[in-house]
Amino acid sequence: MKRFLGYIVVGFLGLYLATLFVPGVKVEGDFETVIKTLFFAGIALGIVNFFIKPIVDLVTFPLRLLTFGLFSLVVNMGMVWIVDILFPKLIIPGLGGLFWTGLIVWFLNFFVPKKRPKIKEE
Image 1: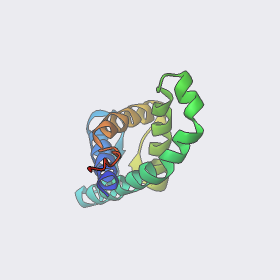
Image 2 (image 1 turned 135 degrees about the horizontal axis):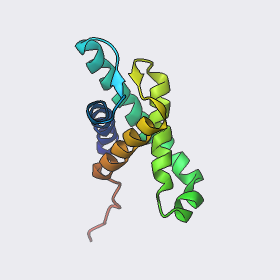
Image 3 (image 1 turned 180 degrees about the vertical axis):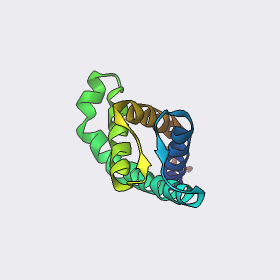
């Protein structure tokens, strides 16, 4: 549950930081619409990262192995692109905006707690 909530927070924060720092990335509308769109897009990005990304990571494992993990940036760009398609008010222009937004989300995903194996104490 912590991981799922972490992905949602990272999704919201990553999209918010992208609207601040990446040229061209924006959300159309007034302040209330912007906050709602970022909130729901963050939830959608969290859901995509939690459910779809592990499957895509498994399928693309050979490519990630050959590129020493850099292909996971391309996978993150794909996850952000899915959310961009789902929310028409979220505007991420071209591959440059998608790259930098994916890079921000990729970096923030390092702070999401990973599953740890439970150690039995005897």
